[in-house]
Image 1: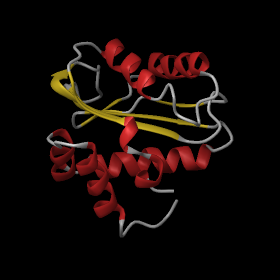
Image 2: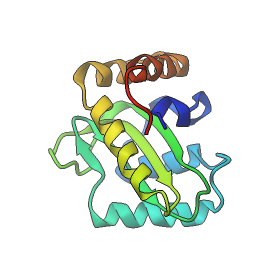
Image 3: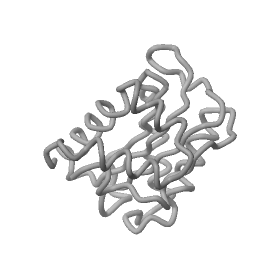
Image 4: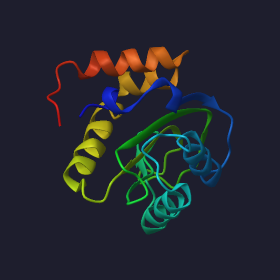
Length: 156
């Protein structure tokens, strides 16, 4: 399972104008509201917010990765957004965030969940890729970037 297999243009939003962490999480949840893998949007929201309360998902290097293992989804759900302006996300490196991924996987997919978190972190953690994502002009550009960068990665 590759990022490009899970992500589609309809779940990518570029240059959002938001100012708070809570706005970002709510917007990410609204982006996936009509995702075919989402069975229970309210439960998904609860589980993502519960995980966020445990520890910020601001993982550093301008990236936030709100996520949940939840029975609110029937298959992996992935969304991506870039922010027009950096915001405080209480990141582990105390740096503001400009790139957001939302990942939700069924509870029984723990191994895949961890592998996807790792893959997202590894790819987006590379400065050149992060810069290309933050400055992408179209959702098509984002998808092409993942196709290009993942061509040599093994399937999960």
